[in-house]
Length: 360
Image (cartoon, rainbow, N blue to C red; front, side):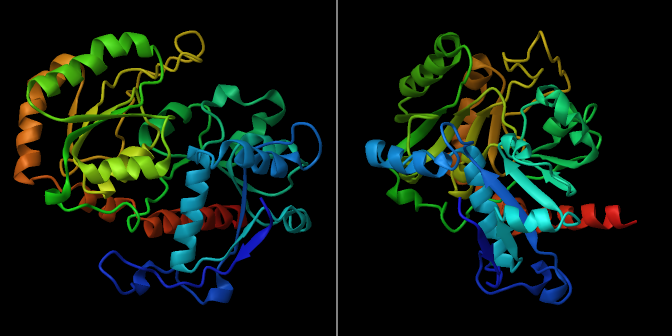
């Protein structure tokens, strides 16, 4: 990614139109901190700088690539900073080496930490490591810096290892993910399959029983599977569907689910709770029993939750009756909590607090 400096001079654009000065950081623009953002999806593999070439070759051979979760976080943060008028630089390694007193905000892949000996205070994340035990020995002092994770349950899991953990969810593009009028929808249910582990087991125990129950009740169903669609396909599916059943073992934030909520689509979410069961860690390396969530950002306006196939069957009728009555207001939840502007200002506030703390 090329070095970029953005002035972030655009006014705050609110969902209802106009601007809101209360959202802009206090103080004259020249007194505001310019954020130093660093984001890289790839490390060099064969020769220095080939990380810039490989995506171009891939695009020629395979077409437009999937936007990763890490890249979506970065893009949405930058979009939010633009809207609220906060300045930032992107991947200006020359500048940050010359200014070791300034905060370096490293988003995404942790290999950037190995590129040179960072002298700066660091704001790390989100999406650095899945769990603190992954951190290599040479970087064990990472805990002395501020580390961002996307949700409260994830912070609870990491805090015994990283005391200075902050919760930061990225904002959602609410002007892109917009509702479609109900009378233009043709499908009752979008079944979103993001079951990542033991898929064959859950195909039998959860996914197919849900699908059969829906179809037996006369509901039309469209299925979309995580990792097997382009963003435009998902947006079009949301425009067709009146509701969504969301199936995922757990989510650190759940951007795809929040895109559905922003699109005005009520969600019936599988939220089994319990321990963190990522098979790369559980039960041999990590046992966290504080309780995970598939929808860490969710309230009664968004829809309903169920624990297993039996719970789905028992509660589906109630959920669907509220969908038909128009009782849910999922987009309102996103507007109140997860806009690009709110996410950008929250991030800036954390960065500012880190520097104030270091100045004491």
